[in-house]
Length: 261
Image (cartoon, rainbow, N blue to C red):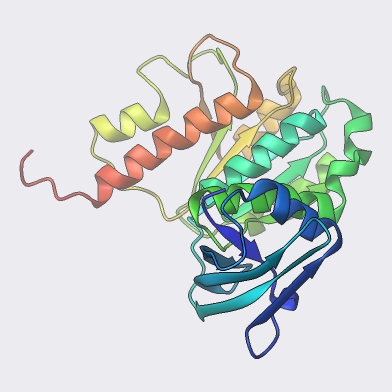
């Protein structure tokens, strides 16, 4: 990993670090540069960044000294609404969300989603956190996305308005949705028309089998625009990454002066 992430309770007030159990095993196995006397870029969960100096490392115990400064959150105004999907896919979605600095990830029930996935072990707090850590360490982000789950579609709809503020762009991803690519994707049209990037973006992705017609209708009624990447049916994590890449391009170009245009 490019960075080492510690949790606040693993760092004493004087900066001394002592990590044991499963966390020590993870640090020893996945951080090849972690060795006595060595230093690594440090991330502190939801706090800031700094430097970690290692004094001892084994699968049972990692010790050292931490020095860091608190900093504002590093998240972007992106939220993902993802229908429950395969546990292995959930892991990838969480890692990408952390790497792309999403504000929030919400897993919701859907008509075509496998109901057994809702009770998968990956949704246990420690397992969710472990996958987020992998993404955070990869890019040097100390601000994890908030993760929520809704086992009932109607419960999600009841609180949907709390996802973002006024002026947000809501997108529902669905391959080959009629009319979604009539004159290019939502992002392509925005770039062509030089629209400013919205203050917040919410992307809703269905399960492996996609959203039902009723769900698509409801999402449209809630203000979601259909956004398709084309006729191809990508894996969930691939479609998610492609959509985020488009949105990041729009965001960056919106921040770039257009004097040359």
